[in-house]
Image (cartoon, rainbow, N blue to C red; front, side, top):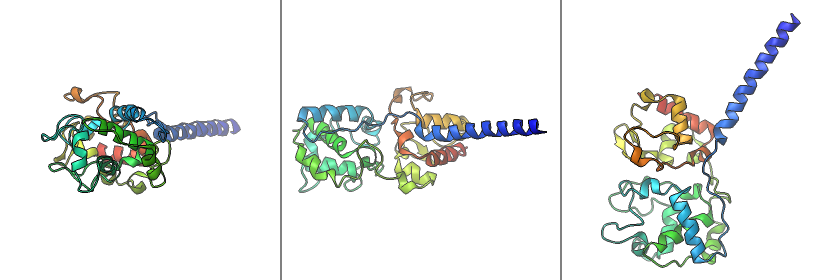
Length: 263
């Protein structure tokens, strides 16, 4: 009898250990987390270089701004006004270029470009203060003059919502596990259709539960470069790879469960 009890106990420990391991894996799956920067004393050239890497990499900016469909083109002409560096000082009365760009990153819905929807999230949840100013400097360099200084970085350092390291300033969507809130907070519908509305940059969420398993949906969120949906090969590499760090395990599973039910 005691041997049976020991066997049952061992099986129970193995099962518990397995699911505990899975629970720890989900929120910690490797993701391209933007590295922390210390640019308070950096030269304009160093700021621009760091911003360039963020814009084309971990910042995820090209997911929308590189296409010119869901958000304005920033590096090329938009509406005959030239690249962003040549037009950013004219967007908001009394606000200079660098201030407007910083505001656009941290309060993106305050001033909307005509013809575009308010889908951009607060980037200070993803990038720290130095990284935000590096992006500003890079954007200014496209058609304009880089005038970001260490004083700008220090002035906003204490007010910046995001802590060093690029970790989210606070729980995404206030920690909510409501999938609709999470999809909106992460600007998912800027690229994906749901209920007949949204973007067409990536595959539609309508019917996705009938096309992909829950595991495949989870993988697509955490490692979007692992596979590319048929017909969207040209968009490969566009989806940000930071969701594994931005979302809690509960939020991730809420999204996966919701999308799995879209049939």
